[in-house]
Length: 110
Image (cartoon, rainbow, N blue to C red; front, side):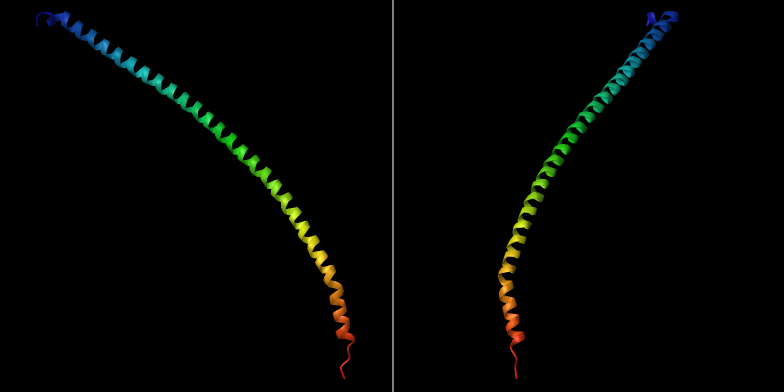
């Protein structure tokens, strides 16, 4: 206990306290730097993820639009074919219907 007596002991305690404060201060600074670095890394990852999702979205939109265009074309062709078939069948039946109507209209019942 001899070395802690008087001014020498107080000076050693002050020095130790200063060293402890420096250690704590350095730890806080390192933690702050690491938090800033983590924030930058997170922002970079978010930007990269957002870009990736945007690319996938644009790709899906282009695929959907492309297939939609081909579906529209296919449906138009099917519609045209069905319309032609209906016109042809009506033209075939038209003469029969006209003849049948004329027969009933001109047939006089007494």
